[in-house]
Image (tube, rainbow, N blue to C red; front, side):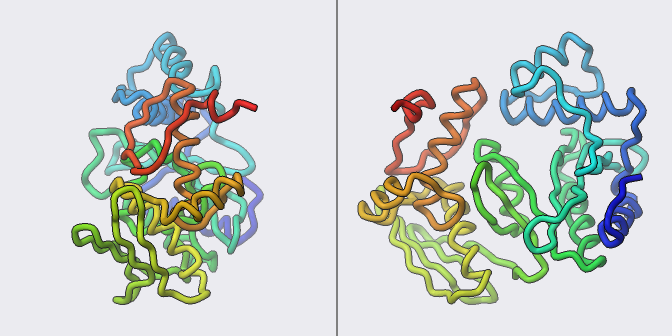
Length: 304
């Protein structure tokens, strides 16, 4: 048993007691089957191929690992920092998920390795698992959950945005979160106009004009207002909208040379770099083309 703080340990047990998940044992055979599901997630998102994780042999496992990951072998999922689970559908193991054991930010736990067998999709199971984890954390006084995903994993990005998750940042990959203090939001699009709406009021309005984006923030200084620009920017990027509001803002972003979070230019700065990295490794990049952006190769980005 992991040595967790009492509220984290109770949150894990609440999650396990929902019947939606089953803690992964340390039996080698069961761990290998779990890792095959994990590999199937990488293969689907990075190679665009659906594989059957329950029938992989050692040769196929090695080949797909080499093609879809940076490692020769996937690491065992048990660690002091994470507790792996099977996702269950009645009496069947149909997917994987990991719940972290250490706190991030405002008392959030990290959730990762969320994968469902294709035969178990489109029935709301992923939503129920995420909701069960979130409810378990809140019941024990924690503030919510966060997860990382890749911009190039567009079905995952679409899914998490559809659940109303907020963008917490993008230092390396996209970080999304559900937090107790963050309200529900919605995206309203009417032709070339879009609104980011919270509690019936628009916090940000935007208009698409060719390769440029008109952008007006109406909110204050709360954490909701702080996270709204990145969340709205990602929602618009998913639709293939421009992200650059002016030549001056874009020049300032390029001069800064980094972006951990923020508004549309910050995301515009990251997207070509994420895509270049993925293409450099031969991974699938099937993403919306953002008007006004250049898409250099990884080598071009790293020239002196």
